[in-house]
Structures are given as C-alpha cells and as structure tokens.
Image (cartoon, rainbow, N blue to C red; front, top):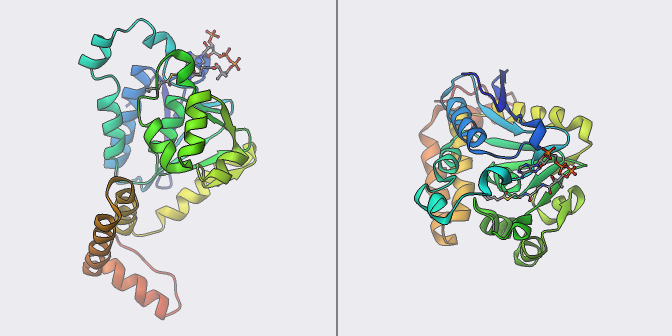
Length: 258
Ligand code: HXC
C-alpha cells in the first residue's frame, strides 16, 4: 500500500518505516498515525519481516502531535472520538520487535511513540521532551506513565512540569535509550541491531517481547510466573532443541521458527 506520510521499505527481513512530513517536523496528525498503525500491522503480518525500525528524519523523529490539527478540537470531539486510541492500540498489538531510531526532536507524542517501541537507539543530536504543559495539556499517549517507568519519578516530573528537553547523553544515562551513536551512523547501527534480531528464532523473539512487556503491566510476582511459564513452554519448540544442541556441538544454530 502507498502512504502519503510514510516511506516503507522492506529489505532482508527488516521493515524500515520512515515518518515523512518534513514540513511539520513529522508532527503526528491523524493521517500519519492511521498510516503508521496500518504499516505496522502489515509488517507484523508480512512473512518477509522479522524486525521493524521506526524512524524519522535527521532533524526530527517527530515533534509531537499536530498542534494545528488539535487546536480547534473540543473536549467532546476528543473524548467521544477517543482521539488516538485506535492507532495506539494497533501499535501495541504488534508482536514483532520494533526499534525506534531517533535523530533530532522526539517531543510530546514523538517521545511517546518512541517509548511505545520496544527500545530506542538514538543519534547524538537527539532531543527528547514532553512539552505538553506549554500547550495547556498533558501527554496523551503514555508519556506520564512510560517516561516515569523509564527514567524514574524525579526526572519524569522535571521533564513534564518544566517541558525541558533531554539530550542524548542524559537520555542514555537515564535509561531512556539503549545506545547513542553519531547521527550519520544511526541507520547503520539500527539496521545492524535489527539484522542480529532477524537471525534469532522468531518464536523466542516473540516470547522475549511478551515477557519483558509483562514487567510493565503486572506486579512482580505475576511477571515472574509469566516469564517462568514462557521459559517452560519454549521447551516444546524445535528451536530450543536446535539452539542448545548447536551450543554443545560448537556451531551456529539454524533456527526454523518451529
Ligand atoms: C504542528 C509543528 C509541530 C507540531 C513543529 N511544527 N512542531 N506543526 N505540530 N507539534 C511545524 C512548525 O509549525 C513549522 O511549520 C515547522 O514545523 C518547523 O518548525 P519550527 O518551529 O519552525 O522549527 P524550529 O524553530 O527548529 O523548532 C523546532 C521545535 C518547535 C523546537 C521542535 O517546532 C516546537 O517546539 N514544536 C512543538 C513541540 C511540541 O510542543 N510538541 C508537543 C505537541 S503536543 P511552519 O508552517 O511554520 O513552517 C503533543 C501531545 C501528545 O504531542 C498527546 C497525544 C499524542
């Protein structure tokens, strides 16, 4: 399918979804979010995709929800229309791993979108922020909840209450991103990480994603039980036999996703 606000490219089992509204620093309007939900669902269903990268431009991953589009909406419009719920639910339903490759601004909804991905790799020019307070609103697609879990209460409060931006070094120090690389190398690094994931058993990759996400959504005891059951369940797969045999035979594993 052709999109107007995205560029999608599938190569070597990696889908790269590039947000593409350069005139508005990739601000997330309903069209872009709808297309993104569609592209992610399509990648999830595509047998030629084993890992997904969501990225933007060198200047902006996304500078937030589209303020122009939101500015005239009433409470009734956004509440009755359940603004952004269907799109974000679709993103969270994706079972394949999603890497956010962030350069430049990831603000408001842009920062929230990056945090909805499974992990964030960023360029050294990245700037993260939740500046909604300056617009008289709060974050709306997870920013108060996810940023707090990523960086802790003190930094999250600081970011949300002052609207200040966090640079790449602070983001790495705080645990918001997993790696920082020079801006020119961002896509090479993201591709090399994605390719590494494509070599694993798709079954185990899905089990890891579900298990780690459980740590966000359940108390520790439930999360530990879920992880243990998932660990036990994987012994029913051929990939577990192959993975362990390959180690013992000192060779590379040949996973078949079974
Ligand atoms: C609509 C936006 C936009 C946005 C930038 N633009 N951000 N349009 N919505 N969020 C547009 C500008 O209007 C401008 O268009 C063009 O992009 C370039 O932006 P400039 O401001 O000229 O660039 P610069 O001076 O480099 O400043 C970059 C910036 C600034 C610091 C990122 O644009 C900025 O502060 N943007 C808003 C950030 C923000 O408040 N985000 C949170 C949104 S609320 P023209 O036509 O004038 O050239 C939110 C709520 C989430 O995200 C809740 C649910 C999703």
